[in-house]
Length: 222
Ligand code: CA
Image: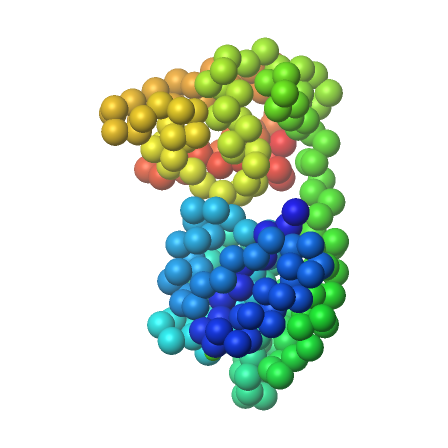
């Protein structure tokens, strides 16, 4: 079920969006501040963000700019004034679409559907196949022989392409308490995981290192 993050400080507008989107089968989260949206997207990546331009803390434009430093998630702007539309259209702020207030919630839901349809067929979708019940991951059609920790690590990375996970977050995912000081052990799991992936495709690098930060799964390099 696609997850939509709604960033809007007016509760009445957020409510109509939540109602329309949930009616279409989307999962929704609502936050009213730009900073909260950024934090939410870092923690739990939504599939699409509906972003109001006029927010009380940082503007929707600034939020989008900061968002683009770590996420390619599709963004639909909600704009109130014609003056804002010029900026949305004229500046390359990385938005996918915009809607002018007042809007029809059903129309917004239709745009959400259209954008998700456009971005859905990831080229690498079939490169990895995860069988959760059998704890099995196949890469380019070849089943990988993974330890339990390697399986959880890879599964976690695959679930949110391009998201950069810290070592601490990956330890949590694997099920090792991160306060135990085992952060570096993630590096050795990643190393052995990479060796297994290279055995299938020597030229690909699906797991990217972000120096001083952590790791991410990159479909483009798979
Ligand atoms: Ca507003």
